[in-house]
Image (cartoon, rainbow, N blue to C red; front, side, top):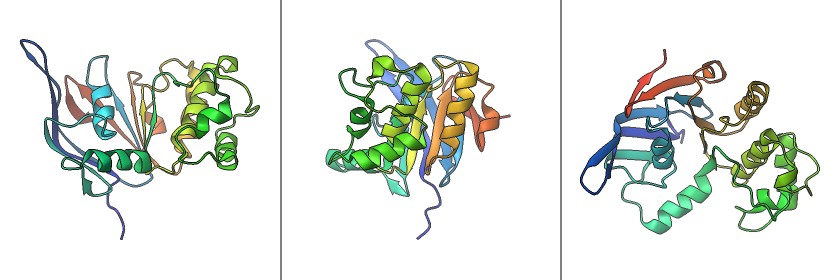
Length: 217
């Protein structure tokens, strides 16, 4: 059976409850990402981009609406089912690579694996163009660190990779190189950024402002 969309939001809103107030981070978002597509969401700080990634990655739950992964509604999932879906279907890359400093590059990539597999981890590192796998994170440039984080996000062959402000700390050349690598992964990609100059790298682009999503341009 062909899956029409890897990720689908249907009228999704997210409201955070503070002590004496409510803050609406996302308002009635509806969109879908087809298989092997790349999508960019841009917006200023505080627009709701990280909330969007956390909802798409099932780390947080929506206040209303429904999120589907490969056609499966996620609202009613048990915690164990949610954890299994995250592990099997979703890869994450964040603003910082979040590599463990006391592990080598190779060991960091193997962390999400149920059983450590050096051959698979090595192939992924080759794919993202990183060598000298016995190095530690302190030996890496920001671009290399994000490449290792990309390899780590792919170890369980996810259906979708979610990248939150992943290029924020890279210079222009490193950003272009990293985005070219992202375009070659065998997964659907959703990336958020405050950089509005990245649209040409993606199949589809949106702008998120004040919790409202609109197509770009």
